[in-house]
Picture 1: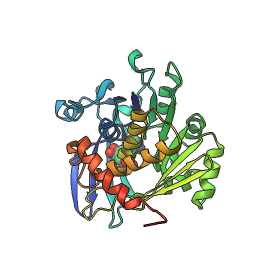
Picture 2: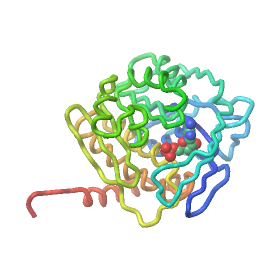
Picture 3: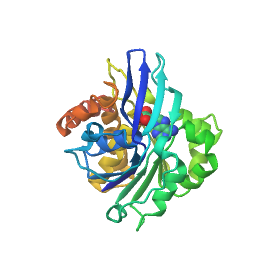
Length: 303
Ligand code: AMP
């Protein structure tokens, strides 16, 4: 089982191709829907009383255990973001923590022994509290974050990063967190803090994996119609970790293959606003696109 702690949110998003107001979002939402295509998942997080049965319906009929989602009086996390013509980086216009502001997570007993744990984008103090409640060390602990937390909670964030196995960040976040402009030097520095592995997401240009002495690069799945990149990073992480959980692996060739799953799942997310497309995707869709992706990336010396 993959346990995911992260945000459950309402997002107002504007891109050059359209806009949505208070659409369903959040790092844990995207990640769990993506990963549940591949493995059993569970979510830890909090929502306000404005998160109704309509929003919760996204989790129904999937391999997502929602017993770790607490409901508190107040407002669900809200994020407002905008993208320019270059969809690679979001501009945050507003972040309202709402019920996440003073949330003290208590992970249900039944969820304290996950094989895989993903500390998705949320306050690093919360990530730490969840990690500390695990009854046994998971096979793999992965972490994602964003500039909002890097800027405001860097020391706490570094304390969590020291304790994880795999960090998944985008290129700008990697540079900001390490203070190093060159990605390869930044990766070396970040891994000297503790994590053995690092994935650097590069938006439409794909992703890099630093795993031991190995460097591995994958492009993104090429798409002619992209609408909203929100949640692509979380879907990527969900596809990657979901595939690892499915195979039982944590490193090496299966981790490289899991990156391809992450890239392909993320490619569905950007094809519509919110979870519009991702929620419709089946395992068969995923496998079919993965086949195309393998053709795209295969490289041989002989014909
Ligand atoms: P990404 O996959 O990086 O595009 O993440 C998009 C999701 O992150 C959105 O659905 C937001 O609700 C969520 N989000 C934005 N800012 C934060 C934050 N500071 N902490 C946690 N989640 C956030």
